[in-house]
Image (cartoon, rainbow, N blue to C red; front, side):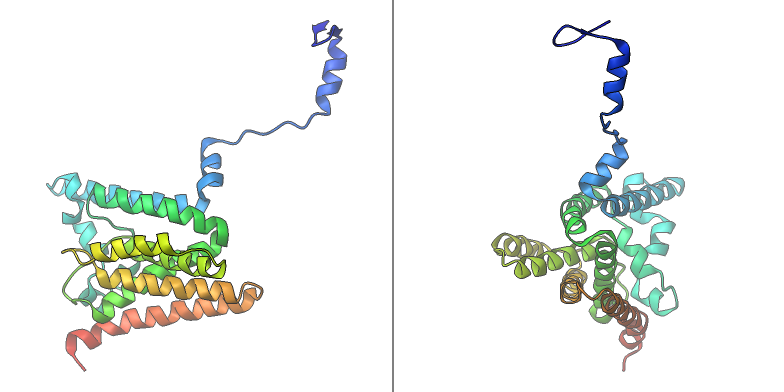
Length: 253
């Protein structure tokens, strides 16, 4: 017999009773984190961290400190160098959005991705959020290619992060929420963007494209085919600008 809250129960009765109870399946740590923070958000963070580790290891093998990962040859092949993009190295604008100069730069940006990305992934869904992130990164890259110094390399996830802020602002307007806190945060970050070594153009480009992307998502929320077509069109326009703008800047027109 098995002791119960009142008297005793036979083992067969206990088994029969337990068979009708639905058991909660405990997920692993990664599954729990994915549910809380978002699978795409955590995947993007993982890619950024992996890129930092790869460039840090490359720097160490070349005789530099791992903390000076931007001195590595691998970093130099992946950052956004406008002249190199104009020479056919088309991958740089996208890979540069996953590079960071040192652990502090990485930690600050990944904290922002975690906070804003998890919220937007929850609101938009995985694939729409991923499209927003990548389009924002391309928007910042396009701005740099159009108006930036063609001989100045640029790297960092800030272009995409500003796009997340722009999208969040659009969603808050749609829901008629107060923008005071978000605008204050944006003003502070724009002021920081004027510091030496920070790409104001990349930040503003990401912000604008992020807002445009969010606008498309809102207006076409009940028309998924049109939504996909407009997002694809925006991506094509940005890629064309990125690949054609450096030639105009470097050689004049």
